[in-house]
Image (cartoon, rainbow, N blue to C red; front, side):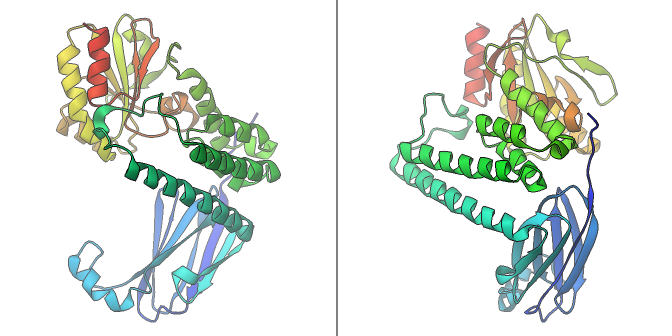
Length: 367
């Protein structure tokens, strides 16, 4: 089956009539930002992009101050009603008009359909957040955040489970009703990181043949296989990635050792905060048939190498591939830092081990 990127031309135009001073419009999507100055509240962006979630921001402009300057926030107070952002789905030709960003109306290809869905989704999400906040307020104090992931024995309340079920049904129902929509493909992508693997797989099965030919679908299928593989007791999937000098490193070369496959990136603050714990574990157990293989998700080689040097990471470092060839996708990594602990036979014996949990797991098997 041929795979296509399916990038499309888009335009985002409109006017915020209440913007009676110079302002900056910022269109953010897919890790990119387009900026445009305006003296009368009008804006016009265009480009080519695979349909994706997007945000249009309005920022009052001061030629001498930036948002990082404390003085800017004093200066902007009389114009604070102009500050705002509008989220939408970037597909085809979109118009955004209103007196302010907060009351702006979005029009364009299926925008009303998408917005109606998002409002229903947001209502359920807020209910989940409310229950979660109530639970935290009544529970005992939480343990240190570095003590590792939530234990398997932790069961959501009945109310939480019902809301999760409604949210899953809402998302899956949309995909089944509109299987040939890029928005549906985007929903499947979002659901991949929600922990609801069953709904994620059903979404992939429901998508149209046209959506199945996209690069994004190919990547999501790799992740679906990763969810099935990356379980305690399974043999870890073999892979080969390159070091900064281009030397290939294969997972099979670690056979016979306990190895921690560590997923991280220089731009990930929690990863950088966790690195001292990983270094401590490495120094304590490196002479006990234990090693670490770190896989960076960085896009910028120089930032990756700078972080390796700053954090003093002495073990082998490799960088992940992009797209469907990504090892992070193959291991169904939905957030970083993340890791997988393997025994000498390449069997998965630990996952998501951080701080004290990593030390405890290694102490148990490397006595």
